[in-house]
Figure 1: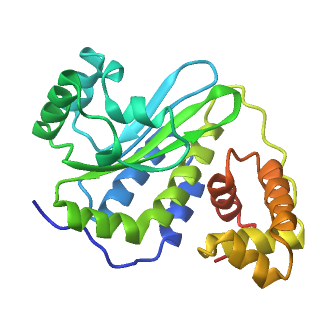
Figure 2 (figure 1 turned 45 degrees about the vertical axis):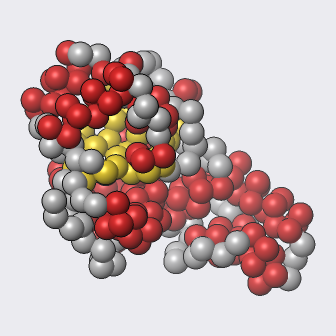
Amino acid sequence: MVSVTTARQPLEPILEDLEQADGLAALQSASEEIRDHYGVDHVVYHWVDSAGDQYGCGTYSDVWRDRYLEQNYLRVDPVILGCFQRFHPVDWKRLDWSSKPARAFQAEAIAHGVGNQGFSVPIRGPNGQFALFTVSHSCDDDTWAAWTDAHRRDLILIAHTFNEKALEFEPDRAPEQSQALSPREVDAMTFLAMGYSRAQVADTLSISEHTLRVYIESARFKLGAMNTTHAVARAMSRGLIVV
């Protein structure tokens, strides 16, 4: 096993490349760039559009990808099953691997180089779209915990930026109408992106937590976000806030 890179590195070049992607081949290249940037074994992005068509890109081997599809592992994969029921990022260790089919699937995935560690960000878009952004690696638990703690914010932002770009390639998709955030909504989103708790944000802005909640919900609605984390990621990916 090898160690992943824990040092913080500039995220901007990755986001710029994603913003400039003009097709699926460019998203594939971006997934390889992200893998190399963070020093992990694999980066995978998979989504289902509003018509039910599935797309994907990533760095798993062709052999494993074909095996996964042939065996229809979508039915037993704890990552897919667990993330479909969640809105927040999840470490694979927190998923249910207790069944015999799940354990057999895990052993085969590791044998194909997927890695014994993983971190996935579930994403929900318009009209029932579901996407999953995943990084995986082979290392010990302590190394992986330190790495995910250091890069969690980056991964969430990359995941939602990836999804924003992927949706542009969905056939017959109407462009989203972007609404400007008010100055107070920008302040609230900015402090949340910096890691402040809601109580700390309210205290910093000299407002009540109830008033803060109104600003957050208003921003979330304007951004078309499913939750606060999603709203912060979208605000950052669109350049509405800068941290």
